[in-house]
Length: 159
Image (cartoon, rainbow, N blue to C red; front, side):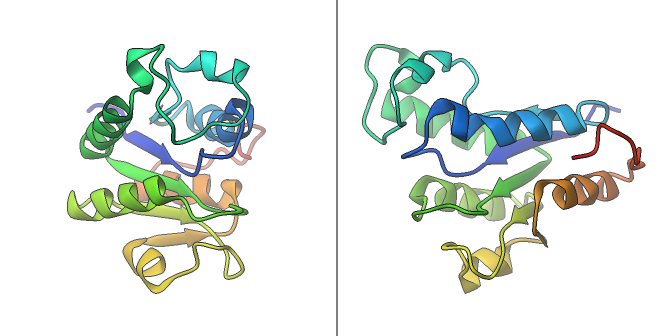
């Protein structure tokens, strides 16, 4: 049996590469022993030198052209086993992440959502499309392990 594949969705625009990537790296490390994670920032390390990520096109690299971003993200959502979406503490609505939420629902992908009632994405559609709503990264990792019937280690690799 192949390892579960988890797509890590969440806001990027307005954040630096490090800000958008740190929680994804934490999740990937925490779940490394039980699944593989798809990071939409993979192959885009050069963005770390450009300040805040925008929705503008970065024509200097084929992976960051607008059509390429949308195409690869849609492909990733389509091929994954589950979408883990982190909307906690977003300071503005992420249109791209909301589109990914719709794709995940349309492709019948289970959605684990990290959000609380005070978050800007708190909306009937967001809450009703998510199978599980968690308050933090640690709880989300616990839910992912339970979904795939993977035992929690209870050790240091948990967030």
